[in-house]
Length: 236
Ligand code: PEP
Image (cartoon, rainbow, N blue to C red; front, side, top):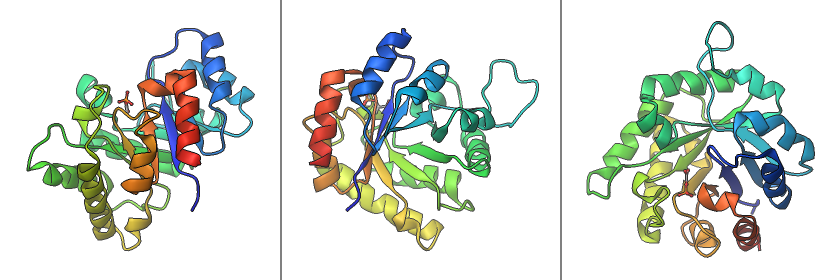
């Protein structure tokens, strides 16, 4: 089996380039994708020997008068192989909706970057399979899934320390694969990552027991020792 993909979402951290470089140097593994803030992308890319880089977002147009925005073409130029799209913080704090995220997915694919498309229910409730389906269909129906990565991130688990119970995550993975297969014949082959309060202890459970193809890590990806431990645990 190939190594699980581990995507590190640094969010708006760290504040200093020196620290960013230190974190990157202990995270430099082939199966890792580091997603630093935009301003650190070029410098981080320079010091990596094995890991890839990704962005945490991008704009839905290639070029033009869009003050303050970053184009996927610029990300390509900076060496990014991936872009995280539709993260719950983007949806909630920046009011990104399905239409906007769909536009970004299409544009990112058109420049040869793989979108890491985040989905996940808001609350623990009986209805949440339907919520997950609605998000997947809304974002991906009609799109080729060939270069897409899906990240299942139940919102109640993000940054809370309360990771999704393993049996629920496993059930959800099965359901997501089924929906992806309905969207496209070979859709079940689309890699699905788990994200939400993953740490060095629970990381391998989501890979080995629940069957996810990788992880999307927030908080712990900034902690050098814990992240190194996590990487060891998921690859051994
Ligand atoms: C995230 O923000 O995508 C995330 C998974 O965060 P954390 O690992 O801190 O829960």
